[in-house]
Structures are given as C-alpha cells and as structure tokens.
Image 1 (cartoon, rainbow, N blue to C red):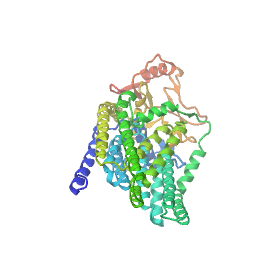
Image 2 (image 1 turned 30 degrees about the vertical axis):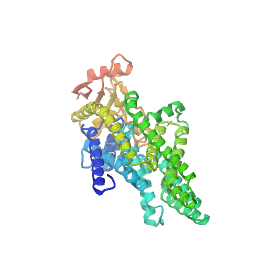
Image 3 (image 1 turned 135 degrees about the vertical axis):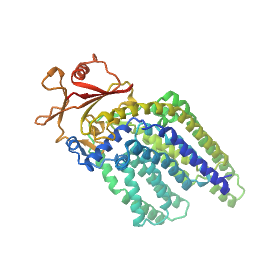
Image 4 (image 1 turned 90 degrees about the vertical axis):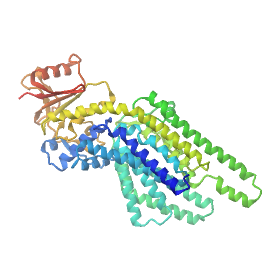
Length: 542
C-alpha cells in the first residue's frame, strides 16, 4: 500500500491524526501537572520581573545566573511566551511544540536513514510521553528534539563540503542542544563522532576511497563538528570543572539497570508495577523485531555462501551485509550501553543520568531495527504494537493527569487573593513526592515572591539567589519571641515580614516546634483568605 501515492498520503494522515490525538489527555487540564513544571513557570516569571519590569523587590532577592548553564532553553521560550500569554497557555504552547516536534523529527530522521521502513516511526509514540515529560524536565525534552533535528541535519550534509553557512547552521543546532541539556549534548557529539568513524572506515574498507581520501574525509568531518561545537564544548568543560567535587555520587546496581531496560523504565512515570506491565510489551516487541532482523541476516548470509559464482556473490553481498546506517547505529548503541552501565546515576542534584542515556539508547535501537532488510509487513506489526503500548499508557495517564490538574488549578487560584509584590512563605505538608513543587503555581503569573525556590539553590538554572543583597525575612511580630520565626539572619541586612503563608496539604500542629509555632502565629496574626480541599492561604492582619 505504501508504494502508491494514495497509500502514502493515507499513512501520513494517520501519523498526523495519532500525533494530534496523543496531545489531548495532556491539554485538557488548565495546567499540565508535572513534578517541576510549576517551578519552571514560576522562575520564568522571575526572569521577566528582572528583565522587563525592573521589579526592585525581585532584584533584591534574585539575579540571573551569570554562568551560561545548559538549562536555559525552556525558560527562555516560556519567558517570551508569557510576555503576551498567561502561564497555562504558554505551557500548552511548549507542550504542543514537544508533542508534535519529537514524533515528526524522529520520522524525518528515519526517512533519511531508512525511507522504505517508515512504518517503524510509529514506535516513537510511546516515547513522546516519557517520565521526563511528566517530571517537568522540559529542557531535557527540548534537547531530545534538537538531538533528532541536528542528527538529521548532519546526515543530510555529511557527503558534501562543509561551507561556512552549513557550519553556522550546525553550530546553532548544537548550541541549542547544549543550552537545553548537557547530557544530550554529550550524547549527540558521541553519536556524530561514531558516524564519522564508521563512514570513514566504510569508505576505505569498501574500496570506494583510498587511504588518503578516507583520511581527508575524516579530517573534514571532524573539523566541521569541532568548529560547530567549539563554544559549547568549552562551556561543557567549564560546567563540570566548576561543579563542587564534594557532591555525592550515586550508582545504581547493575541488576536494577538491567531491569530498567526490559521494563523500558524511561517511560514509567507514576507506578513501576502498573506501567511496567505495559512497557514490557514494548521491550518484547523491540527484542522480537531485532531478533527477526538478525535471523533474516543469517539466512541471507547462508545464501551468499552457497552462491554459485562470484558475480552472484557480489550481488548478494550488497543485499545481505548491514548498511552503513546499520553499522553506525549499532556502534552508537554499544557505546551508549557502555555509558549506561558505567556512569553514575546522580551527581549531587543532577540525577537520572542512566535513564536519560537509556531513553536515547531506545531511540537509536528503533532506528537500527528499521535498517534491517526484512519483509515489509513487519513494519505494520511494529506500528500496531507501538500504538497498542502508546494507547494503553495514555489510558493510564489520563485520569492521573486529570486529578493532579485539579490540584494545580486550585493552587493557582489562590494567587487571586494575593497582592502583587508581597512575600509568601510556601509550606508543603503532603505525603506525595510528585506534588512537592505545586506551591509554585501561585507565582506563575503575578509578581508574587516565594521565599523558597529550589531552582535558585542548585545553580543549574537561569535564576539564582542574590546572595549579596538578599534581605532577611521573618514570620510573626519580632516583639513577641514566642510568636516569631526568623528564616534568614544575615547580619546588617533588613528583615522583611512575610505577608502570606500558603499551605498545600494539612499540617499537624503538634509535630514539632516549627509547626506548633506556625499554628500559633497563624491563629493570632493571620487571617484565612482562601481554602480548598488541597490548599489554604493565610494573610497577615493589618
């Protein structure tokens, strides 16, 4: 069917419909409730307050990170969008960009690598909703998009001369990859380097080039990627060189890493048992397709051995041996497997390294499988299997997203009761690791200053604390020691009084000194101005 223009148009239409339909469950709620999403939206609001509104209060507490950290892209996009859109719409635009960009970029890359096996592109759909999306790791997801686009650009231009315009375009793509996520930037360079080596060896071993020509090809390609990545590479080295060496390094046991592979752990967001029953089907499908490809390769190799004459052997040889694309993707996958089992999963606050590598590894494996010369109807099996897993995962995610979306909207609604340019103490007391940053939803649109900000503490994001000018702040009247809590006590600096206390969940006033004192302060000196089943907001009495 795909050999006719009508069949190709129908298949292309199906791909578009699946892409659009896949977005629906994530766009039905006002906010897309994710682990870090609220923090990113809140911090882009801080960026705008600093850059465009000259907000003096915010300038005392925050500054833009002078280090060009590789976590800027999503903040930059959201900050620009929020100049003319409310936070929830800006987030939706970013989600649409990711949920359409990644499948289309992957399909375009597969069309470059293996155009006859385009049905394997449907295997990307489960990977458009990975744990990284639900965790709000938007920069990582954007980096994946640029990884696919940059790789495709390289493949399309590697055969020609690298003129300045091409190198500049490549440098822009590589730069965006770096400023999105440092791990994906590193993997991109590794995969391109593997490509250069494989293509050079293939040109020499297949006798399409002599040694001098092959060496010249290698140098030209190496210089092109080095020139394009020169500045990001310097920043890459600086980024790791300046990280404190005392941070805790965490490794995951080999047995657990193996389990991560056969359960396709990068796709599991909420429940390893429930989602693992679905994702393991995807692993079995990929394993079966890879095994089938190897079997057909062996069968054809036997036919080559039994060929009657040299001409027939040469003809069969070109049909049997893996293509350059296959060798390159296999080599890249092996390198990533080595890194997957060798690198630590966490280095201080930077974590999930193994799962990030594993995610890219699965994308390369799908591309590698598409290079096998197997009957075309296996592509249909791959497409149906990929959609089966994707639909079941979406069915599992939809009610969870709906419930979490109600909580996110409820937290955001509390901001209606907060005056601009006031200080808010966020208190999170729920036993749910996923909603720990939902307190930030009150600061995504209004100039509301939350005195706690995890991104500012890490140094990995565009906004950091203004340590040279950050005021002290306190809760309750200083004249009554029993009703007073100091949070900052830097000598010689003014102390500002907290105007609002925003509580997500319900606290036990007898838990410890802090909550006992907080309960007393709220009862005497604050008024409840907003309450829902998820959160409550208290305003300081005049």
